[in-house]
Image (cartoon, rainbow, N blue to C red; front, side, top):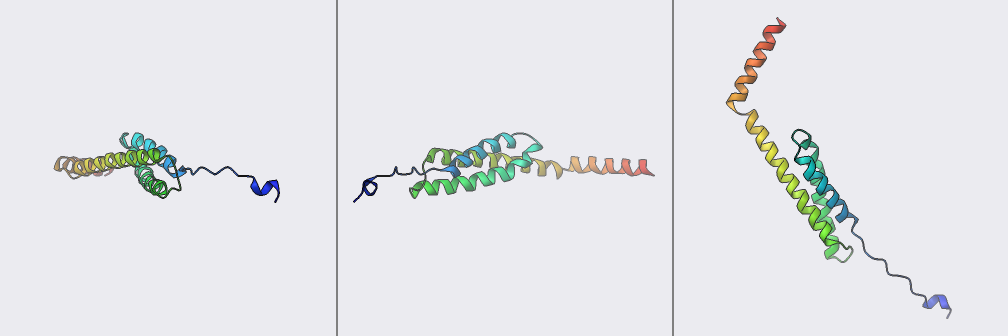
Length: 117
């Protein structure tokens, strides 16, 4: 046997790029979700962050990945961002459906129609 047969190759460390991506998306998602109006961009960011975080956690539990903390933190942050987005959506719907808003909207539309004629 030759020397090459006994040569050991370093074992590759499993990584968790999905967990890291979930963490980055979670941070970005929370920041974006806090900004009124621009927060609409946060919806897909936090949803993808949750999905990647869950996949990252599964990879860790299967022993195919490391950095479980990043995957869990990314999932939690993305979840927080999603909750903030849902709260903004509920607030927007309640404002648009309020009688005060609808009356004001109808009055403004009437004024616009009068100005055009």
